[in-house]
Length: 174
Image (cartoon, rainbow, N blue to C red; front, side, top):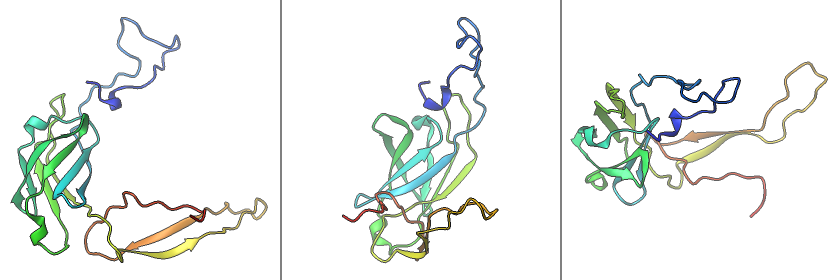
């Protein structure tokens, strides 16, 4: 397939392996893994992303909070992203949404077992708290200790996964 995970630069001394098996060839024997699931804002649609291209025609056993859900297709031409119709999730208060699916297949015929993933929901006011900030760490090459890094610790105040998509942090004023 044209799945980018199947491509890498040659490591052969000549730089290529014409008419021979590619120097980086690895047989794909791994079933697809679900990387994340996120509820898209306002649409009752869930976006699923896998670590490789999947065969959407073979995705049949899909549940959201133990209710059947259906795949509506790929996210454009992106072969590792599926769009799922979430049904009527608006009737539930904001709480955990659990995705369950099984027998997801890639194009080599590798089939996953049972997959479960909490669905990340859009960020709302009050969902996140800045818990700890290291904004001006020690930077001394002569103290025999590793130099410290800047960091920021966030706490999710909700009992369900939230998406940080679209959140930007920077050190310049607007």
